[in-house]
Image (cartoon, rainbow, N blue to C red; front, side, top):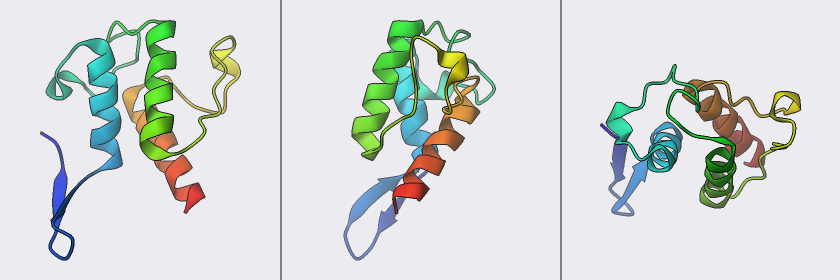
Length: 99
Protein backbone atom coordinates (compact mmCIF):
# COMPACT_ATOMS: atom_id res chain seq x y z
CA UNK A 1 0.00 0.00 0.00
CA UNK A 2 1.30 3.45 -0.89
CA UNK A 3 2.14 5.81 1.94
CA UNK A 4 0.44 9.03 0.94
CA UNK A 5 -0.57 12.15 2.78
CA UNK A 6 -2.95 14.96 1.97
CA UNK A 7 -1.90 18.54 2.50
CA UNK A 8 -4.95 20.45 3.67
CA UNK A 9 -3.70 23.83 2.48
CA UNK A 10 -2.99 22.66 -1.04
CA UNK A 11 -5.41 19.75 -1.35
CA UNK A 12 -2.56 17.84 -3.01
CA UNK A 13 -1.76 14.22 -2.35
CA UNK A 14 1.93 13.65 -1.56
CA UNK A 15 3.43 10.20 -2.05
CA UNK A 16 6.67 9.30 -0.29
CA UNK A 17 9.91 8.97 -2.22
CA UNK A 18 10.02 5.31 -1.20
CA UNK A 19 6.60 4.60 -2.65
CA UNK A 20 7.36 6.49 -5.86
CA UNK A 21 10.62 4.57 -6.36
CA UNK A 22 8.87 1.27 -5.66
CA UNK A 23 6.15 2.17 -8.18
CA UNK A 24 8.80 2.96 -10.82
CA UNK A 25 10.59 -0.32 -10.18
CA UNK A 26 7.32 -2.27 -10.12
CA UNK A 27 6.29 -0.83 -13.47
CA UNK A 28 9.59 -1.90 -15.01
CA UNK A 29 9.26 -5.37 -13.45
CA UNK A 30 5.64 -5.65 -14.66
CA UNK A 31 4.54 -6.21 -11.07
CA UNK A 32 2.29 -4.57 -8.54
CA UNK A 33 4.07 -2.30 -6.05
CA UNK A 34 2.69 -4.54 -3.30
CA UNK A 35 4.72 -7.43 -4.70
CA UNK A 36 8.03 -5.57 -4.38
CA UNK A 37 10.09 -6.27 -1.26
CA UNK A 38 12.80 -3.88 -0.06
CA UNK A 39 15.36 -6.69 0.03
CA UNK A 40 14.73 -7.61 -3.64
CA UNK A 41 17.51 -6.93 -6.13
CA UNK A 42 16.66 -5.72 -9.63
CA UNK A 43 17.69 -9.19 -10.89
CA UNK A 44 15.29 -10.84 -8.39
CA UNK A 45 12.51 -8.81 -10.01
CA UNK A 46 13.53 -9.77 -13.54
CA UNK A 47 14.87 -6.31 -14.37
CA UNK A 48 17.75 -6.53 -16.85
CA UNK A 49 20.37 -3.86 -17.53
CA UNK A 50 18.18 -2.08 -20.09
CA UNK A 51 15.26 -2.07 -17.68
CA UNK A 52 17.51 -0.70 -14.97
CA UNK A 53 18.65 2.15 -17.22
CA UNK A 54 15.02 2.93 -18.09
CA UNK A 55 14.13 2.96 -14.38
CA UNK A 56 16.98 5.36 -13.68
CA UNK A 57 15.78 7.71 -16.45
CA UNK A 58 12.31 7.72 -14.89
CA UNK A 59 13.78 8.37 -11.43
CA UNK A 60 15.78 11.30 -12.82
CA UNK A 61 12.70 12.79 -14.47
CA UNK A 62 10.40 12.18 -11.50
CA UNK A 63 12.70 13.68 -8.88
CA UNK A 64 14.59 16.17 -11.05
CA UNK A 65 17.95 14.67 -10.05
CA UNK A 66 20.99 13.38 -11.87
CA UNK A 67 21.75 9.79 -10.92
CA UNK A 68 25.50 9.02 -10.86
CA UNK A 69 25.20 5.67 -12.62
CA UNK A 70 27.26 4.18 -15.43
CA UNK A 71 25.42 1.28 -17.06
CA UNK A 72 28.69 0.01 -18.50
CA UNK A 73 30.25 -0.26 -15.03
CA UNK A 74 27.38 -0.55 -12.52
CA UNK A 75 29.69 -1.89 -9.79
CA UNK A 76 31.82 1.27 -10.05
CA UNK A 77 28.85 3.58 -9.55
CA UNK A 78 28.21 5.83 -6.56
CA UNK A 79 24.53 4.87 -6.93
CA UNK A 80 23.87 1.60 -5.07
CA UNK A 81 21.53 -0.65 -7.06
CA UNK A 82 22.01 -3.82 -5.01
CA UNK A 83 18.47 -3.82 -3.57
CA UNK A 84 15.24 -1.85 -3.76
CA UNK A 85 16.04 -0.44 -0.30
CA UNK A 86 19.47 0.73 -1.48
CA UNK A 87 17.92 2.43 -4.52
CA UNK A 88 15.31 4.15 -2.31
CA UNK A 89 18.01 5.39 0.08
CA UNK A 90 20.18 6.63 -2.79
CA UNK A 91 17.24 8.55 -4.30
CA UNK A 92 16.34 10.02 -0.90
CA UNK A 93 19.95 11.22 -0.54
CA UNK A 94 19.94 12.78 -4.03
CA UNK A 95 16.66 14.59 -3.34
CA UNK A 96 17.90 15.83 0.05
CA UNK A 97 21.15 17.08 -1.53
CA UNK A 98 19.31 19.23 -4.07
CA UNK A 99 17.20 21.01 -1.42
